[in-house]
Length: 298
Ligand SMILES: *[C@@H]1O[C@H](CO)[C@@H](O)[C@H](O)[C@H]1NC(C)=O
View 1 (spheres, protein in one colour):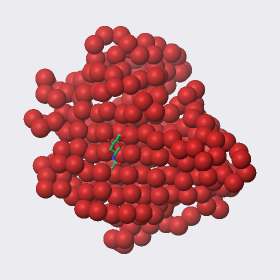
View 2 (tube, protein in one colour):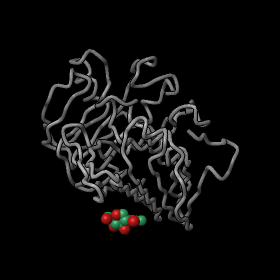
View 3 (cartoon, rainbow, N blue to C red):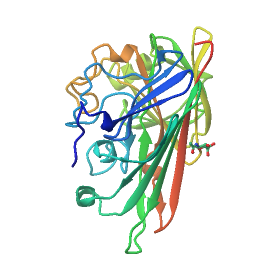
């Protein structure tokens, strides 16, 4: 597979408005920075590897055509390790494409077209992904995936997450994939996380797939709203992830994760999990989006 040249500006794209900026690597169509009012809003590991030898840790990775380890492929599929191409570029908007190539066909024998439209607004970011089945053999295909957005916080302790996940069922990946129900008004991280982690034997680790979610979530801390996050209903699920101290050698974290990373980041990911896999007939297109809005009083 083609690899990026870390010194090559052509492999990196910058978008801007009067008050916001965005940087994206064509390796994985991976957003590596999003600032509003000169403040970074996405978490990137200081140990992230940017030379294309492995997926980039932080920002917004794209998982396709497999979510997490829910299948036979490498964690999160191959799209985050492929070089995407630029279809069009304006000051605050870019359209990227990825099609099947020899290497992807060896992993997943389908023809497809992914289109990723990233639009930067003065205080928000629209991430629109579409998937088209371009098989020439009448074969439908199924896929899962996510936008693995890493939100940045000054401090994750006592960050609250309210809204769309209330009352929803979730799979607790830190507790043997037991299905549970989200009680109460909101989720507090990592105080509540510690509780669930104790049950699961891994202190503080939060890795949950909320099922059949919809609507808007709000991150806040100390009564201040920080981020509003919305996803289209075409992503049936939402993943919430904070590895806490985790296991740095474990498959879920790895050596490119800062030791104190868990104190600064929370992932909220529009997701298609295995139980809700999407099937497309030839010629059909699926579209899904996430909108990240930074609150003014941040
Ligand atoms: C992304 O999708 C949303 C919802 O359909 C739409 O409002 C927005 O205009 C789209 N943005 C781009 C850049 O296509």
